[in-house]
Each structure stands twice: as structure tokens, then as C-alpha cells.
Image (cartoon, rainbow, N blue to C red; front, side, top):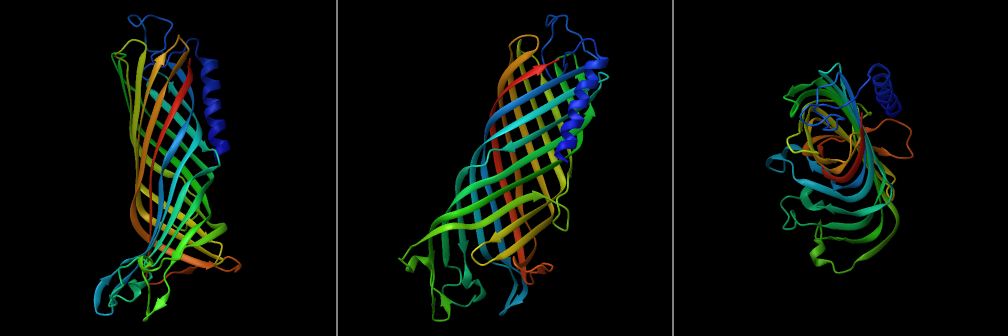
Length: 355
């Protein structure tokens, strides 16, 4: 899929060079060999924008009990577990934006992260929630803190829409398109505090002073846009892209994207217990917005800064599990719900070409 998208964007650029005698990206870039006063909208234009920066945020996994009726309590669904993966890592991105036949926008981008140690992972458990009448029912019983390592990250988008140009100063582009993303971490080493069984329940970690050292890899965890069955799948989006060109040599670009039918899944492999978990949240959504401010160096070159904010809010789904050594199917987790959440931002420097 990544190779196909890259080839498609390169071909779009090549075709534009073949059929267009003069490029200037009206509504998407302020470059022009003509003066600001006399510039005209071209029938074809392309902007190529590589960028390098930092992506940061948090990816979280949740597990809840789910009972219609449990020990005299109706709709009992307390939180059983929470894992937070905090991250900050460098990434590279390449975006291609083009205007076809003056009124049609076609653009896409591809981003990859650079694998390295990127933060910490914290694991929380409330094991006494299965004993709601106990005095320690809501107390934190297990806690561990680990080194978090980015194994992989990629994100790609492709969008199309009509280019509405207003006096060569404002461009509005309603968008429709799709996206695909995935991120994977591994948690290693660290420290833990675990409650012990006493009086029919686990003691809170606040009563346990002994802290244990952990070594080696503990968990491999990934989140990815997916199909309902947990397989990888592209996600449909709607949005709006805009361009403002009021200040000489300064271009402001931005977009809003909304994924209304976003399905997100997670894969969670606990190495010490040799257990794999898959969670699927089918009826979620994703919101993304970005802003770029660039300075025109000359008719073809520009440089600037870029920022982006993405959020996949926590919603609940279903969970499956099996032993990693078992070759059979995953088992559905009865009386259990999963939750997936991700909030992230990007900040980068851009340096691009406009034709």
C-alpha cells in the first residue's frame, strides 16, 4: 500500500511536468515568477514538501469489567487495568500537493518515525475490583514503570477535492480521502510494586514498600487503523484545506480532517506470561488538524514551520486473547471491555519546492 501511494504521487508530479509549461501553485503556494500584483492562476501546479521534526504524545490501553449485574451491583464496569505509553521521537515526512486543471486538488503525505527509546510506559492494575465489597476494592494493587522504545511508526494520507480560489489570496478545498496509520512500542526493564494476597484480596501498593527491579523486554504493543476483525484497513475521511496569501512572501496553510467511521485496534503481547491480546474499537473517530507557515525564498524554494494535532478519544470495544504458543484462534473475552486512546502532536521544519 505504501509503495502504491508513493508511486501514484510521483506519477502525478511527472504528468504535470509533461503537460504544463509553467507551474505556480495558486491557492497552495505563493511562489510565482510574476509579481504579486500580476500573478495568475495556473492550470497545473505542484508543491513538494519534505519535513523533519518531533512527534510526541501518549497512547493508552484500558481494560474494564463488564457485567449487567455483579454481586448486587447493576451495570458494573470498573476499570481493571491501564497502560500508558508516553512517547517523543523524531520523524520524517514527505507531502505532495498538486492543482490539476486549475480547479482540482490532489495531495497526499507519508510519515515515518525513527526507532529509538522514546519515553516511559506505566502499567496500572486494580485487581480488587472483582471483589467490590472489600475495603480495598478501588485501591491500586499493581504498578510498574518501564523504558518505552519506538519500534515503528507510519502514517499516510491521500485526499482530493475542488479548489475554490478567491482573488488569488484565499484557497478553500473541501476534501475527501483516506488514511492509514500504525504505531508500535516495546516496553523493557524498569521497576514494579505488586500487592500480595491478604484477607481474600490484594494489598494496595501504598502498603507495600518493597520495589522490584525488572530486566529484559516485557511488552510489545501496537495501535493501528483497522478492519472490524482487527486486520489493517484504510480509513475514510472528510475535511477542509485552506491557504492564505495576504502577506508578501508569507504563506499560511492548514487543514482539518475528520474520520467519522474510524476503527482502531491494538495488539498487546505480554512476554512474561506468553499471552497475546487484541482489542478492537469499531465505532470510534479521529480528528486531525495542522498548520504550516512558510517563507518564500525565491520563485521555487520555501522554508517554514509545521504543527499538527491528532486525537483518537477513548471509546470502548471488545477484546480477544490467546497464548502466543497456541496456533489456534483468539478467544473472545467475556465480561470484559477494552479501551483505546491516542493523543499526539507534531512539530517540524519544512523546506520545499514549488513548480
